[in-house]
Each structure stands twice: as structure tokens, then as C-alpha cells.
Image (tube, rainbow, N blue to C red; front, side, top):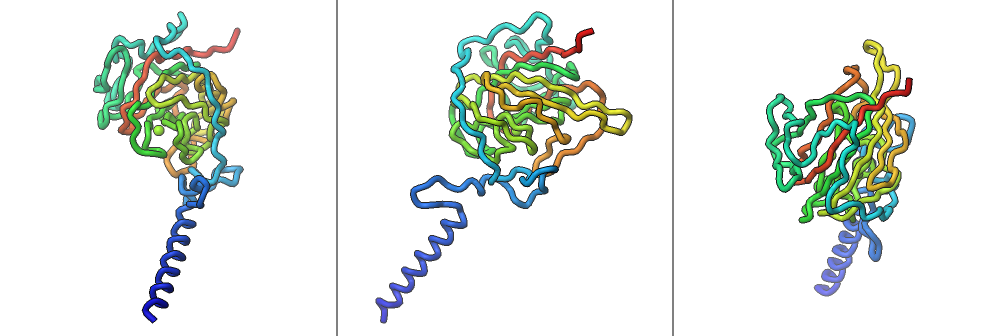
Length: 277
Ligand code: MG
């Protein structure tokens, strides 16, 4: 009798464990399902079938990028507005306009947790931007909790910066994503603790009074690999929401995010894009 109860208990425990395993997406002999990476209680993105931050959206395929220039960055082009060349933080302000308190160490700028986002003093419309970033060599956390920052055009349209080296997350939050909208086509991440490059062509949205007359478009080259190809933005890039457009001036600042992780930046410059006459 006792043995029979034990057997039933053991069977019940095994069944419970198996149900828990399935619920958590764990499969014997396989990787965890990605559905637990994102959200399914968020709105559906316009014109598609995916929720904002949908964990079931296909993961961007991994591409091994070239090693890149790890020692010292190339000089900025002669007509660029240099936002950071390793010498000082004078081109950046806090949201209140005060000098920033991120660290300047050995010619690189480092996020200081709690110091807040930083905003460029110069403002830009259509532009070409170059930026180099390094996610922390000492890896902490996973998903969105690993090496998270972000690059915002006009202070509101985010191109994600994240350590996605062996670190899947919801695809529209992957490095190179138009956050909460469009995952990168591929994931050419380098290892944590190495320099990575962004070369981005930004086409600012156009407004006529309160009306949007042309959406924003972005092309992103990450570590020499195209990850966004003239991608149309559906609006700004809020967490768990579908972005919307609200009219703003033709030019706006570049913003870099303090998401609590000590990312490093170097060699940030912007060229205004002007049509030929
Ligand atoms: Mg971010």
C-alpha cells in the first residue's frame, strides 16, 4: 500500500515536472523555446502578425562579422560634426542641459549607472552617423539585461544597442533593431569587450503642421554588415507599445541611453546629408 502511494507520488511528481518543463519551454536535448524571451500581451504591430516584442518572431540569423579595427579608430571625415573624439565630453548634455557625468577614461566614454541618458548639444535632420561601442567584457544578466544601451535619433527613435553575442532576446529588441518595430535582418555581433561599429543613414520624418507627410527611414550597417535597409519607422519606439508620430522640428539631438550597464563609446561623428543641387 505504502509502495503504491509512493509510486503514485513519484508519477505525479514526474508529470508535474514535465508540465513545468513544457510551460517553461524546456525540451530534453534541445535549446529552450524562444517564446519566453518576449511578450504576447502587447499590441500587434501594424500590417503584420507579430506582437510588439514577440518572442516567437524568428531570431535574426547570426553572421560572423570582420574583426574590425580594434586598436584605434579611424579619423572622422573632414566635413563631420565630431561628437566624441576621446578628448572631452563637451558635446553632450543631460536632459536638463547640464554637463554629463559619464566617465571619460583613456579616450573612451563610459556609461555611469544612474547618471542618466546623454544628449548631443548639436541637432541633426537627415544624416550619416558613425559610432563605436563596446559592451562590458564582464558579462552580467541575459536578454535585455545584458549590455543594454541605445542610440536615439531626435531623442525618441531608438536603434537598439545590446550585447547579443550568445544572448537571444525578443527580436525587435536585438542590437540593430528599430526598437519595438523591426528586428535586424541578421545579427553580426562581436564578443563582449570588443569594439563594434554602427554606420547609420537616417532620413528624418517630415511634418506639415500636425500631419506626417513622410515617415522616417533608417539604414543600419553593424560591423560592416547591413542590418536595416531603408526601413520605414511607424513612429517612435516605446517599450511594449506601438510607436506613433508626433510632430517635431526638422532637426533633433542624438541621445545615448543609460540603461544601467557600463558600455563604452568612442569615435562618434555625424555628417549632415544634403541633396545635390
Ligand atoms: Mg536599449
